[in-house]
Amino acid sequence: MTIENRVVFLVGKKTNLRPIKESEVPQITCWINDPEVRKYINNILPFTERQEMEWYKKLGSDEKNLILGIETKEGKLIGTMGIHGIDPTHRCASTGTLIGEKSLWGNGFGSDAKMSLLYHAFYTMNLNKINSSAFEFNERSIRYSLRCGYQIEGRRRAQFFREGRYWGIVLLGVIREEWIPLWEKYTTIGSLK
Image 1: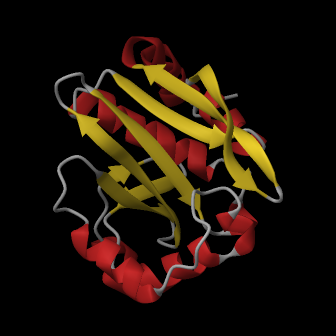
Image 2: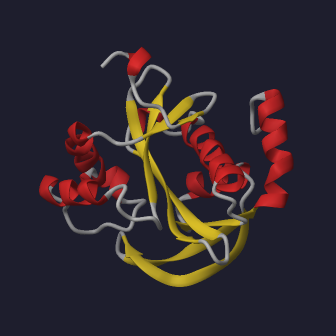
Image 3: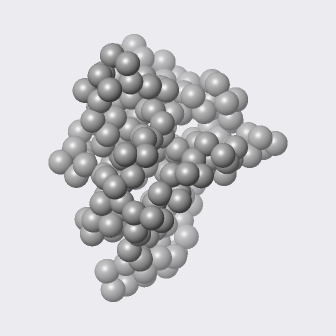
């Protein structure tokens, strides 16, 4: 498939968000089993390609979850991002992001993709609040969430066990009306700085 005729769902400045392809399941399986990547996600057991394929086959059949692949403008899959637990009554949900291509960590791809996803959540899905969380030692994830308009709302102490000790979880949230000025700035100057 050429870049010109590939499926793109959301377009950002540095990334596109699009449906995940079945042929990409082995790559995603490698990412979530990589010790450096796995350190930051809620996954302590190995995942097989078969388990990931079962996950893939459920995509699109659950109205409470939207999972998309993050790709560069050149069409290279670099991670996944989703909106989870969509609550149409209270108009809230949570998000999660995985940038599996470690060489691209810290280059703004996650922030760009998150801004596109938040735009979709607030302006198309009519959600009012998006929640997220990060292990307290995942400073990069916390910083990127704050750049994207999230605020720290609390902490859960000693919630997860990693690397021989218990760690807390930082709880974050962003509300549509507080996020809109950030979106307007982002679309004008093209940066979150």
